[in-house]
Length: 124
Image (cartoon, rainbow, N blue to C red; front, side):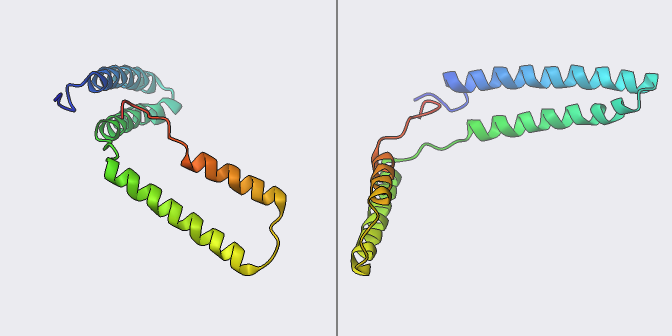
C-alpha cells in the first residue's frame, strides 16, 4: 500500500505546492521592492502574496487529507435517500391530491439522477 504522502497524486500536489510557494515568494519580494521605491499600492500586494501562499498550503493540506468514502458510508447514504424518497411518496399518496404530471416527471428525473453512480474524482 502506498503512503498518502508518496502516491502519484500526492507527489503532484507536492510539486504544485512547491511551485506555488515559489511564485508567491518571488511576487512578494518584487512587491516589497516596488513598495520601497514608493508605490503605495505595493504595500498591500506585499502582504497579499504571502497570504496567497498560506491559502495554497491550506488547499494542499485539504486535498492531501481527503478521506475516501467507504462502501459502508455509501450504502448508508443510499439507504437514507431511499427512505426519504419513500416517506415523500407516502406523504403524497396520503394527501389524496392529484399530482401534477410535469412535477411528477421532474421528480422522477431527479430520483434517476440521485440513484445513478457518481463520477469518481481524484482517484477515489
